[in-house]
Image (cartoon, rainbow, N blue to C red; front, side):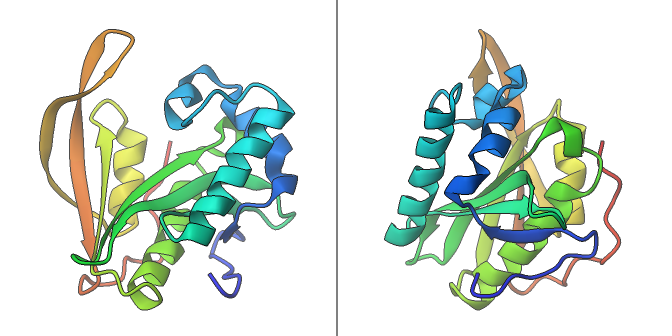
Length: 186
């Protein structure tokens, strides 16, 4: 995003910076966050490598990852757009929120501005995302961000020997802009 956009809750989506390593390390210290990482993040060096991969992906234009920061510029969560397909003008959205920031609309507000940026600046037409059906907070964030539920992928994901259904959502460039008041996240 060329300019920082202040979101209603005082949050700002911005590209990740190496100085965000302490926030990334703290977020990935939570056991449930292991599923969100593409590699183990247990040291400051791991966090810096995680951040460098995001910067490299942005530079190569294969994925765009945003920190969702508060008014003190502390990263509270992440929103990424990956699997960008220029031929079909599509991308895949994923997001996570640090435990201390959950319930404050970080994912909801964080998804809105990058989605709008993808439609306006990248020329994408369709953004997709999926969440485990046992994660109702993620579903509320998707809906509040303007993503419409489209269907169920049965037993798509496997964690610790357990299979999980995934609900699919999508937002189109032609969809109405989501309401400014987010649904409450938990």
